[in-house]
Amino acid sequence: MKKSSKLLIIFGLSIVLIYFMSKYNKAIKSDIIANKYETVAKVYDIKNKNKKRWLFYKYKFKNKVYKSKVINKEFGSNQFLNRYYRVDVNSKNPERDIIYLDREVIDSLEIARSGL
Image (cartoon, rainbow, N blue to C red; front, side, top):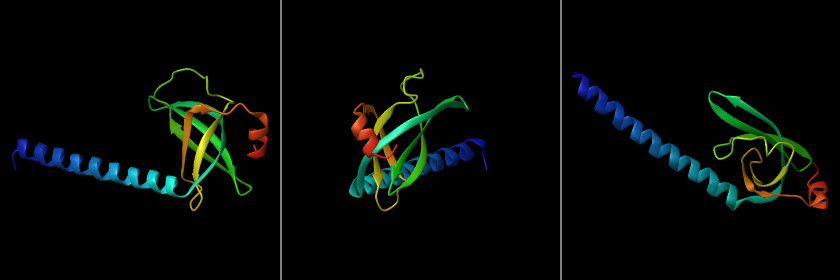
């Protein structure tokens, strides 16, 4: 097989893989929104790994604390650390969530009600 044919096959498989990953991520997001439970999450750590900046956060659902992480693409400072943000949790699968870093929660009563 020629080198150009192998590259074409690899390129085609890469496109197919990206397509299916995108569909899978959209399905997860749709499932979270369909079974949404809105609460508050606290960013408790920020780490740089593999040239990416990760935000680690936790939230409480049905008296259990869940931890999650997200890549922080837009901001380069520690401005999120020890702050609270809105998070949508999948009520059927609480390990799945969407955090909204543009929706900071500053109401101390709301934070207390969330259990954090």
